[in-house]
Amino acid sequence: MKPIILGSFLGAVAMFIWGAVFWMGPLPKGVGLTARDESALGQALRQHLHASGTYTVPGLSTEPKRAEELAQKGPLAVIHYRSTGGPLPDPSLLLRGFLIEWVTVALIACLMQMAFPVLNSYKRRVLFVMLAAVTLAVHTDAGAVAWWHHAPSWAWLMAFYDVSAWTIAGLVLAAFVKPSQNGA
Image (cartoon, rainbow, N blue to C red; front, side, top):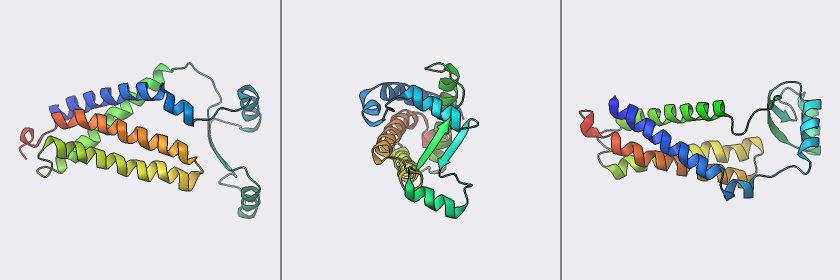
């Protein structure tokens, strides 16, 4: 259990550091778009969205015939909305994000243990995590293009981030979670 706890913690730290470097770098700024007038858009959102949450245009509970009319006319959107402001960066968001990373790296460590003795080398353990990352990216990031109208450029950015972050975590995790430590 100790290798999973330590390895997943250090893997999550590596993932967290990579996330900071990546998201402050030039790639997201080159892919993410900014509204012409952020203040006016913020005001319009406050005016038309009644509570914090996720909205779709057309809405998921819109009557089907009306939804089809709205969809044909456009625009189509998914809006993740929080009505209150907050600091950038938000320390509580950073903490929650790190805890999620730690839990997910620990879960992949548990899956890795289940695959022993097949994952008997460092390289195989890293490739196992990379394959899990690619699976996640295809399902989640490509799925967002298919189902939720995400821009392909944003999905590629997210997929690159997901696979690179998980690969970095896997490089660390594979050094700690080994068959010899678990009797496998």
